[in-house]
Length: 270
Ligand code: DGL
Image (cartoon, rainbow, N blue to C red; front, side, top):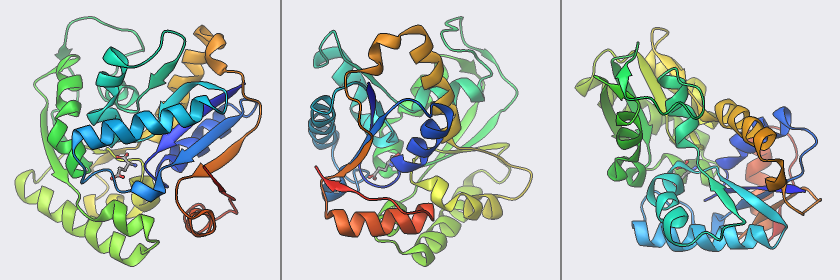
């Protein structure tokens, strides 16, 4: 039994960590497509092809259920995968919906019509491809009315994190927050819509100030996976071994992962 966790690179490790803490008995196979990161500057077709290839690789590890721990893949590829590509006996779940359900105070499966919610001004920080897809606004509109969303495409941040350049990542985050504030001076909530961003969450929080509630996905996705597996235990899959795979250079990727998570992680070649 194993569940797959996929990301373009290191960011999905933030979700992987939360899942491992929430479901310690479920083996997890992580795949980072570091050879092709960042996805956020690629076309939707390119993201779709790379994501399908990554998910197929995880099937080979006995993972019938794969979490796309990547907003860019969830935004640009997931719907097309589910509608045109995914076999009946496999599942791929994204990271968007659990966060939007939290923001709109809904429980899983609550399909009632959109309604007024507490937050009215939301700042979204995400990759250029995620922002361009407008997937966040589309999913939000199914559940809430009257929410003003201002999205900031955070060019360069994923690249800086993948390179292990924490100083550049911090400088870019600060300038992206300033840019957003010029268009929306007082957001009530900020969504970190990229799984790489929790690595620099304190920089976002500092730049946004104490009045802004920062939503990050890892814990929300882990809770929603636990809920899903309780209802559909057959999707835990046939694999039994936990491992970390990368399409990049395993030594380099292990070093960067260890740097960001501040605990040793060893990647194998995918
Ligand atoms: N962690 C991915 C996300 O959540 C980063 C995408 C990228 O590689 O640009 O969007």
